[in-house]
Amino acid sequence: MKEFKAEVNSHRPLYEQIGLHIIQCIRNGRYVNDEKLPTVNEAYTALSVARDTMVKAYKYLQDEGWVRSVPGKGFFVSRNIESDKKRLFVLFDAMNPYKETLYRSLISSLGDEYYCDMAFYYYDKDVFERLINNAVGKYDGYVIIAHFNIDVSSILKRIPHEQLMLLDAMPQHYNKPCSAVYQDFHNDLYEELKALYQKLSAYECMHMVFNDSFQFIPIEILTGIHQFMSETQYPIYIEKAFDVESLEKGHCYMAVSERDLACIIKVVNQRGWTLRKDIGLLSFDDTPLKEVLQGGITTISTDFRQMGELAGKLIRTGTIKRIANRWTLSDRGSL
Image 1 (tube, rainbow, N blue to C red):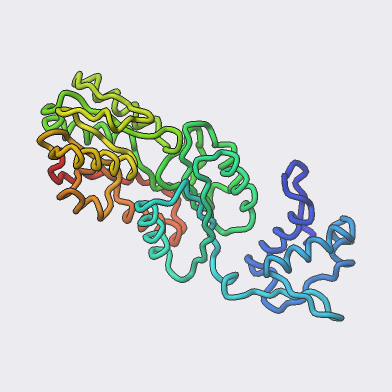
Image 2 (cartoon, rainbow, N blue to C red):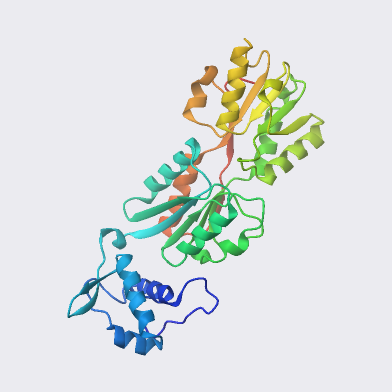
Protein backbone atom coordinates (compact mmCIF):
# COMPACT_ATOMS: atom_id res chain seq x y z
CA MET A 1 0.00 0.00 0.00
CA LYS A 2 2.94 2.33 0.48
CA GLU A 3 3.02 3.06 -3.28
CA PHE A 4 -0.36 4.77 -3.09
CA LYS A 5 -0.41 8.44 -4.00
CA ALA A 6 -3.57 10.48 -3.58
CA GLU A 7 -4.80 12.62 -6.48
CA VAL A 8 -5.39 16.03 -4.95
CA ASN A 9 -7.66 17.28 -7.74
CA SER A 10 -9.61 14.05 -8.18
CA HIS A 11 -13.40 14.10 -8.01
CA ARG A 12 -13.17 10.88 -5.98
CA PRO A 13 -13.00 11.02 -2.18
CA LEU A 14 -9.75 9.79 -0.61
CA TYR A 15 -11.23 6.56 0.75
CA GLU A 16 -12.42 5.57 -2.74
CA GLN A 17 -9.00 6.31 -4.24
CA ILE A 18 -7.45 4.01 -1.62
CA GLY A 19 -10.04 1.32 -2.35
CA LEU A 20 -9.37 1.49 -6.09
CA HIS A 21 -5.63 1.24 -5.44
CA ILE A 22 -6.15 -1.95 -3.42
CA ILE A 23 -8.41 -3.36 -6.16
CA GLN A 24 -5.64 -2.75 -8.66
CA CYS A 25 -3.19 -4.54 -6.37
CA ILE A 26 -5.56 -7.53 -6.24
CA ARG A 27 -5.93 -7.57 -10.02
CA ASN A 28 -2.17 -7.41 -10.43
CA GLY A 29 -1.66 -10.35 -8.10
CA ARG A 30 -0.10 -8.36 -5.26
CA TYR A 31 -2.83 -9.72 -3.03
CA VAL A 32 -4.31 -13.14 -3.76
CA ASN A 33 -7.62 -14.71 -2.88
CA ASP A 34 -8.08 -15.33 0.88
CA GLU A 35 -4.94 -13.35 1.72
CA LYS A 36 -5.21 -11.23 4.86
CA LEU A 37 -4.89 -7.48 4.29
CA PRO A 38 -3.18 -5.05 6.69
CA THR A 39 -5.30 -4.08 9.67
CA VAL A 40 -7.01 -0.70 9.69
CA ASN A 41 -4.37 0.61 12.13
CA GLU A 42 -1.49 -0.73 10.01
CA ALA A 43 -2.99 0.64 6.81
CA TYR A 44 -3.82 4.17 7.95
CA THR A 45 -0.41 4.48 9.60
CA ALA A 46 1.38 3.32 6.43
CA LEU A 47 -0.63 5.67 4.24
CA SER A 48 -0.60 8.63 6.65
CA VAL A 49 -4.36 9.10 6.43
CA ALA A 50 -7.09 9.41 9.03
CA ARG A 51 -8.29 6.18 10.63
CA ASP A 52 -11.87 6.97 9.59
CA THR A 53 -10.72 7.25 5.95
CA MET A 54 -9.23 3.76 6.09
CA VAL A 55 -12.40 2.33 7.68
CA LYS A 56 -14.41 3.83 4.80
CA ALA A 57 -11.93 2.39 2.28
CA TYR A 58 -12.39 -1.14 3.61
CA LYS A 59 -16.16 -0.63 3.73
CA TYR A 60 -16.03 0.44 0.08
CA LEU A 61 -14.06 -2.72 -0.81
CA GLN A 62 -16.61 -4.86 1.01
CA ASP A 63 -19.50 -3.20 -0.80
CA GLU A 64 -17.76 -3.76 -4.14
CA GLY A 65 -17.23 -7.45 -3.34
CA TRP A 66 -13.44 -7.46 -3.21
CA VAL A 67 -12.92 -7.90 0.55
CA ARG A 68 -14.68 -9.76 3.36
CA SER A 69 -14.46 -9.10 7.07
CA VAL A 70 -13.85 -11.98 9.50
CA PRO A 71 -14.72 -10.91 13.09
CA GLY A 72 -11.69 -11.02 15.35
CA LYS A 73 -9.33 -11.82 12.44
CA GLY A 74 -9.43 -8.88 10.02
CA PHE A 75 -10.01 -8.29 6.34
CA PHE A 76 -9.37 -10.86 3.61
CA VAL A 77 -9.34 -10.75 -0.17
CA SER A 78 -12.57 -12.25 -1.47
CA ARG A 79 -12.54 -12.70 -5.23
CA ASN A 80 -15.75 -14.09 -6.67
CA ILE A 81 -16.23 -15.64 -10.11
CA GLU A 82 -16.97 -12.30 -11.75
CA SER A 83 -13.94 -10.56 -10.25
CA ASP A 84 -11.72 -13.28 -11.74
CA LYS A 85 -12.89 -12.15 -15.18
CA LYS A 86 -11.61 -9.05 -16.89
CA ARG A 87 -14.16 -6.33 -16.31
CA LEU A 88 -15.23 -3.95 -19.06
CA PHE A 89 -17.34 -0.82 -18.85
CA VAL A 90 -19.47 -0.48 -21.98
CA LEU A 91 -21.07 2.92 -22.59
CA PHE A 92 -23.43 3.34 -25.56
CA ASP A 93 -25.33 6.40 -26.72
CA ALA A 94 -28.65 4.52 -26.99
CA MET A 95 -30.05 1.07 -27.58
CA ASN A 96 -31.73 0.31 -30.90
CA PRO A 97 -31.81 -2.72 -33.22
CA TYR A 98 -28.39 -2.13 -34.82
CA LYS A 99 -26.70 -1.19 -31.53
CA GLU A 100 -28.09 -4.42 -30.08
CA THR A 101 -26.46 -6.27 -32.98
CA LEU A 102 -23.19 -4.48 -32.18
CA TYR A 103 -23.40 -5.30 -28.46
CA ARG A 104 -24.24 -8.97 -28.98
CA SER A 105 -21.41 -9.32 -31.49
CA LEU A 106 -18.96 -7.67 -29.08
CA ILE A 107 -19.97 -9.96 -26.19
CA SER A 108 -19.75 -13.04 -28.39
CA SER A 109 -16.31 -12.03 -29.66
CA LEU A 110 -14.99 -11.37 -26.15
CA GLY A 111 -15.92 -14.81 -24.84
CA ASP A 112 -16.29 -16.02 -21.26
CA GLU A 113 -13.15 -14.33 -19.91
CA TYR A 114 -14.85 -10.93 -19.81
CA TYR A 115 -17.60 -9.44 -17.70
CA CYS A 116 -19.33 -6.30 -18.99
CA ASP A 117 -21.26 -3.58 -17.20
CA MET A 118 -23.36 -1.54 -19.62
CA ALA A 119 -24.82 1.96 -19.45
CA PHE A 120 -26.47 4.53 -21.75
CA TYR A 121 -26.32 8.32 -21.82
CA TYR A 122 -28.83 9.16 -24.58
CA TYR A 123 -26.81 12.10 -25.96
CA ASP A 124 -26.69 13.90 -22.61
CA LYS A 125 -23.15 15.21 -22.03
CA ASP A 126 -23.63 15.56 -18.27
CA VAL A 127 -24.78 11.94 -17.95
CA PHE A 128 -21.89 10.85 -20.20
CA GLU A 129 -19.39 12.64 -17.98
CA ARG A 130 -20.88 11.37 -14.71
CA LEU A 131 -20.93 7.76 -15.87
CA ILE A 132 -17.31 7.89 -17.00
CA ASN A 133 -16.17 9.63 -13.81
CA ASN A 134 -17.84 6.93 -11.74
CA ALA A 135 -16.32 4.12 -13.83
CA VAL A 136 -12.69 5.27 -14.12
CA GLY A 137 -10.38 3.07 -12.09
CA LYS A 138 -12.91 0.30 -11.55
CA TYR A 139 -12.45 -1.64 -14.79
CA ASP A 140 -9.81 -3.34 -16.90
CA GLY A 141 -11.12 -1.72 -20.07
CA TYR A 142 -13.62 0.82 -21.38
CA VAL A 143 -15.69 0.48 -24.56
CA ILE A 144 -17.19 3.86 -25.40
CA ILE A 145 -19.45 5.22 -28.14
CA ALA A 146 -18.94 9.00 -27.93
CA HIS A 147 -21.60 10.46 -30.21
CA PHE A 148 -21.31 14.22 -29.80
CA ASN A 149 -20.74 17.15 -32.10
CA ILE A 150 -19.06 18.97 -29.24
CA ASP A 151 -15.64 18.42 -27.70
CA VAL A 152 -15.69 15.65 -25.06
CA SER A 153 -11.99 14.79 -25.38
CA SER A 154 -11.19 16.08 -21.88
CA ILE A 155 -13.68 13.57 -20.44
CA LEU A 156 -12.30 10.68 -22.49
CA LYS A 157 -8.74 11.54 -21.46
CA ARG A 158 -9.62 10.60 -17.88
CA ILE A 159 -9.57 6.99 -19.09
CA PRO A 160 -6.07 5.50 -19.58
CA HIS A 161 -5.73 5.47 -23.37
CA GLU A 162 -4.34 1.93 -23.43
CA GLN A 163 -7.59 0.73 -21.78
CA LEU A 164 -9.94 2.64 -24.09
CA MET A 165 -11.77 1.21 -27.11
CA LEU A 166 -13.77 3.76 -29.12
CA LEU A 167 -16.65 2.41 -31.17
CA ASP A 168 -18.65 3.83 -34.07
CA ALA A 169 -17.28 7.41 -33.99
CA MET A 170 -13.96 9.19 -33.59
CA PRO A 171 -14.61 12.14 -31.24
CA GLN A 172 -13.35 15.56 -32.20
CA HIS A 173 -9.97 16.57 -30.77
CA TYR A 174 -9.24 13.22 -29.08
CA ASN A 175 -5.61 12.49 -29.98
CA LYS A 176 -4.49 9.75 -27.59
CA PRO A 177 -3.29 6.41 -29.10
CA CYS A 178 -6.27 4.26 -28.17
CA SER A 179 -7.94 1.47 -30.12
CA ALA A 180 -11.00 2.22 -32.24
CA VAL A 181 -13.38 0.60 -34.71
CA TYR A 182 -15.24 3.49 -36.26
CA GLN A 183 -17.28 4.78 -39.17
CA ASP A 184 -15.77 7.26 -41.62
CA PHE A 185 -19.07 9.07 -41.96
CA HIS A 186 -17.95 11.77 -44.42
CA ASN A 187 -16.13 9.65 -46.97
CA ASP A 188 -18.41 6.62 -46.78
CA LEU A 189 -21.63 8.61 -47.24
CA TYR A 190 -20.05 10.59 -50.06
CA GLU A 191 -19.01 7.38 -51.84
CA GLU A 192 -22.42 5.73 -51.38
CA LEU A 193 -24.26 8.79 -52.70
CA LYS A 194 -21.99 8.76 -55.75
CA ALA A 195 -22.85 5.09 -56.30
CA LEU A 196 -26.56 5.98 -56.14
CA TYR A 197 -26.31 9.12 -58.27
CA GLN A 198 -27.90 7.63 -61.37
CA LYS A 199 -30.91 6.42 -59.38
CA LEU A 200 -31.18 9.66 -57.41
CA SER A 201 -31.27 11.59 -60.68
CA ALA A 202 -34.68 10.06 -61.43
CA TYR A 203 -36.06 12.21 -58.61
CA GLU A 204 -36.38 15.96 -58.44
CA CYS A 205 -34.44 16.13 -55.17
CA MET A 206 -33.71 14.21 -51.97
CA HIS A 207 -34.70 15.07 -48.40
CA MET A 208 -32.62 13.84 -45.46
CA VAL A 209 -35.23 13.40 -42.72
CA PHE A 210 -34.49 13.37 -38.99
CA ASN A 211 -35.64 14.69 -35.64
CA ASP A 212 -32.79 16.74 -34.21
CA SER A 213 -34.35 16.94 -30.73
CA PHE A 214 -33.48 13.28 -30.08
CA GLN A 215 -31.29 12.06 -32.88
CA PHE A 216 -27.54 12.32 -33.18
CA ILE A 217 -26.31 13.26 -36.63
CA PRO A 218 -22.51 13.32 -36.96
CA ILE A 219 -21.36 16.57 -38.52
CA GLU A 220 -19.29 14.47 -40.92
CA ILE A 221 -22.50 13.14 -42.49
CA LEU A 222 -23.54 16.68 -43.35
CA THR A 223 -20.12 17.53 -44.77
CA GLY A 224 -20.23 14.37 -46.90
CA ILE A 225 -23.62 15.43 -48.27
CA HIS A 226 -22.36 18.93 -49.02
CA GLN A 227 -19.35 17.57 -50.91
CA PHE A 228 -21.65 15.37 -53.01
CA MET A 229 -23.99 18.28 -53.75
CA SER A 230 -21.10 20.56 -54.63
CA GLU A 231 -19.72 18.11 -57.19
CA THR A 232 -23.02 16.97 -58.74
CA GLN A 233 -25.30 19.97 -58.19
CA TYR A 234 -27.97 17.48 -57.09
CA PRO A 235 -30.24 19.13 -54.47
CA ILE A 236 -30.44 17.52 -51.03
CA TYR A 237 -32.45 19.19 -48.27
CA ILE A 238 -31.63 18.62 -44.60
CA GLU A 239 -35.05 18.34 -42.93
CA LYS A 240 -35.03 18.74 -39.15
CA ALA A 241 -38.33 17.97 -37.40
CA PHE A 242 -39.76 16.91 -40.77
CA ASP A 243 -43.53 17.05 -41.30
CA VAL A 244 -44.32 13.69 -42.87
CA GLU A 245 -47.54 15.07 -44.36
CA SER A 246 -45.39 17.18 -46.70
CA LEU A 247 -44.24 14.14 -48.71
CA GLU A 248 -44.27 14.86 -52.44
CA LYS A 249 -44.36 12.60 -55.46
CA GLY A 250 -41.21 12.62 -57.52
CA HIS A 251 -39.01 13.28 -54.49
CA CYS A 252 -36.64 10.92 -52.67
CA TYR A 253 -36.42 10.62 -48.88
CA MET A 254 -33.52 9.39 -46.76
CA ALA A 255 -34.79 8.38 -43.29
CA VAL A 256 -32.25 8.44 -40.47
CA SER A 257 -34.28 6.77 -37.72
CA GLU A 258 -36.61 3.78 -37.60
CA ARG A 259 -39.40 6.07 -36.46
CA ASP A 260 -38.99 8.40 -39.44
CA LEU A 261 -38.93 5.41 -41.78
CA ALA A 262 -42.15 4.01 -40.31
CA CYS A 263 -43.93 7.37 -40.55
CA ILE A 264 -42.98 7.78 -44.21
CA ILE A 265 -44.13 4.26 -45.10
CA LYS A 266 -47.42 4.80 -43.25
CA VAL A 267 -48.22 7.92 -45.31
CA VAL A 268 -47.11 6.21 -48.54
CA ASN A 269 -49.54 3.35 -47.86
CA GLN A 270 -52.36 5.71 -46.86
CA ARG A 271 -52.01 7.59 -50.14
CA GLY A 272 -51.78 4.42 -52.22
CA TRP A 273 -48.35 5.33 -53.54
CA THR A 274 -45.69 2.88 -54.69
CA LEU A 275 -42.08 3.08 -53.59
CA ARG A 276 -39.64 3.78 -56.40
CA LYS A 277 -42.47 4.70 -58.79
CA ASP A 278 -44.02 7.58 -56.85
CA ILE A 279 -41.27 8.40 -54.36
CA GLY A 280 -37.83 7.03 -53.55
CA LEU A 281 -36.94 5.80 -50.07
CA LEU A 282 -33.51 5.21 -48.57
CA SER A 283 -32.60 4.34 -44.98
CA PHE A 284 -29.54 4.42 -42.74
CA ASP A 285 -28.36 1.41 -40.74
CA ASP A 286 -29.51 -1.96 -42.03
CA THR A 287 -31.63 -4.36 -39.97
CA PRO A 288 -33.28 -7.71 -40.81
CA LEU A 289 -36.68 -5.98 -40.83
CA LYS A 290 -35.61 -3.65 -43.65
CA GLU A 291 -34.82 -6.66 -45.82
CA VAL A 292 -38.53 -7.58 -45.94
CA LEU A 293 -40.39 -4.33 -45.15
CA GLN A 294 -42.41 -3.13 -48.19
CA GLY A 295 -40.58 -5.73 -50.26
CA GLY A 296 -37.20 -4.44 -49.09
CA ILE A 297 -35.84 -1.00 -48.20
CA THR A 298 -32.59 0.19 -49.78
CA THR A 299 -30.05 0.93 -47.06
CA ILE A 300 -26.58 2.32 -46.60
CA SER A 301 -25.00 0.96 -43.47
CA THR A 302 -21.88 -0.13 -41.72
CA ASP A 303 -21.69 -3.77 -40.63
CA PHE A 304 -22.34 -3.59 -36.90
CA ARG A 305 -21.77 -7.30 -36.46
CA GLN A 306 -18.30 -6.93 -37.96
CA MET A 307 -17.65 -3.87 -35.81
CA GLY A 308 -18.33 -5.87 -32.64
CA GLU A 309 -16.19 -8.79 -33.81
CA LEU A 310 -13.23 -6.54 -34.64
CA ALA A 311 -13.49 -4.65 -31.35
CA GLY A 312 -13.63 -7.88 -29.36
CA LYS A 313 -10.57 -9.25 -31.16
CA LEU A 314 -8.54 -6.09 -30.48
CA ILE A 315 -9.50 -6.17 -26.80
CA ARG A 316 -8.69 -9.89 -26.40
CA THR A 317 -5.29 -9.57 -28.05
CA GLY A 318 -4.39 -6.27 -26.40
CA THR A 319 -3.82 -4.71 -29.82
CA ILE A 320 -3.92 -0.92 -30.07
CA LYS A 321 -5.16 -0.18 -33.57
CA ARG A 322 -7.72 1.97 -35.36
CA ILE A 323 -9.93 0.35 -38.00
CA ALA A 324 -12.41 2.10 -40.28
CA ASN A 325 -15.49 -0.12 -40.58
CA ARG A 326 -16.65 0.37 -44.16
CA TRP A 327 -20.22 1.01 -45.30
CA THR A 328 -22.12 -1.18 -47.73
CA LEU A 329 -25.05 -0.45 -50.03
CA SER A 330 -28.00 -2.86 -50.02
CA ASP A 331 -30.11 -1.97 -53.07
CA ARG A 332 -33.54 -3.52 -52.57
CA GLY A 333 -35.62 -1.57 -55.05
CA SER A 334 -37.16 1.19 -52.91
CA LEU A 335 -35.11 3.77 -54.77
